[in-house]
Image (tube, rainbow, N blue to C red; front, side, top):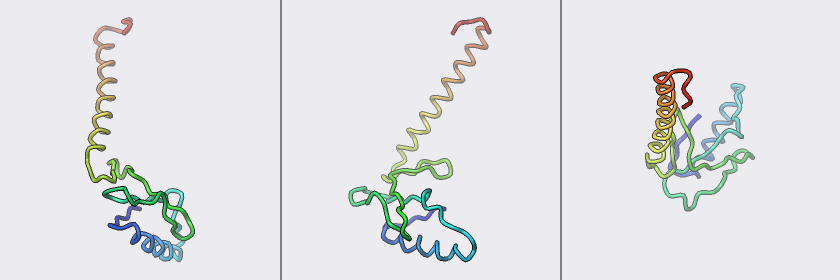
Length: 108
């Protein structure tokens, strides 16, 4: 589940409501896996929030649907992550290409 809120203070009542609405359906919030993220300057962001007697960790970044979401609202961390993944894949591919080109007995 992902919820976005401009203010973390608004997120707490929404999460409490969500738990109340989910309970009659036999659903429970997995609090250890639940995290909150404040977008923008991280000056006044607490380390965690207290929701329904549970601590919800506030994080600076997380991956959602394969994309890195950073609290700075900048795409630079995601671009750096994708470049690193591409670099690693190309290095593995390069090694395999040279091994097949030079033969199985080559010490590469």
